[in-house]
Picture 1 (cartoon, protein in one colour):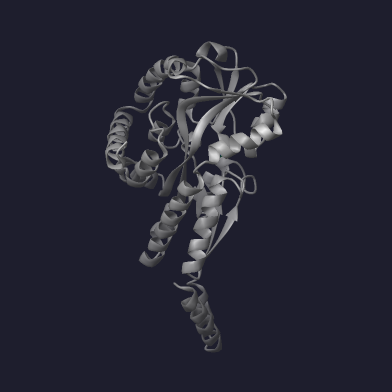
Picture 2: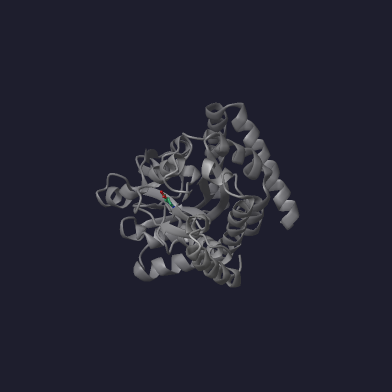
Length: 345
Ligand code: 6CS
């Protein structure tokens, strides 16, 4: 609905009120709740703001955004969507492996493409994501609305990391998905799954000595105050998903389903563009606040032992998830290849 027709709708509501028909009219305008795993000025907040603006500019519906913490941690907001207490949430695969084991494919090291344009094309077009995995969400009474990357993951630690040996004895925080425990075991660390809200304090108290996240998040959550070294290993890009309650979404009119899909498309385009240069800007801000922060980009040679460890993680994924995992991984890699050819990289 355009802005003009919204004005018209308001006038129609006034007329409906006069005729005693307001209940019918207001039932058409819905108010939806969207919970995030991040703050409003972080990547998920920027996406959700664009999504909200699109919905509100094109319909009578409205979206209320609940940033990280206001309704709980990642696990809490996923449950709220499952119960239908809220309509939308970010639910990153890093927290979803127990519910949908196949989603752990996103956590496999050195599988997602590093080139941003290939990555964006892959998320937008992959049948493995948008059909195979989407059907697995539906089995859990969830509708997959969108998936997008949030940036290259870096390790932040108290001591410099050049090789898996340097991770020996390091309690390394990971998100709660089981495959991340396999990954950091293979990388030589002692993996410690924790919800996000406990990470800063655990680093401060030296209960853990490392964690991984995209650079924008390292900057915005001030990880540079409680860790001293950043290492670019090139092993992954952070993926998030936007989910909706399945009954809610499937019960929407075709028009509203289309509205949500279009809002997600607009927000996807915006968030991909928004992230151009974000890692570099975030690194510069970190160095401004903490000029002595150690920053290391591992060379190809230095990445090699991590790549070899990744082979073992791949085997663990197939053993843990079974034939459906192997099928998803095969589809995933074929879709990445197709994106490479399409983008010409
Ligand atoms: O590491 C985490 O738990 C968090 N990282 C990001 C980039 N977003 C939300 C998530 O909770």
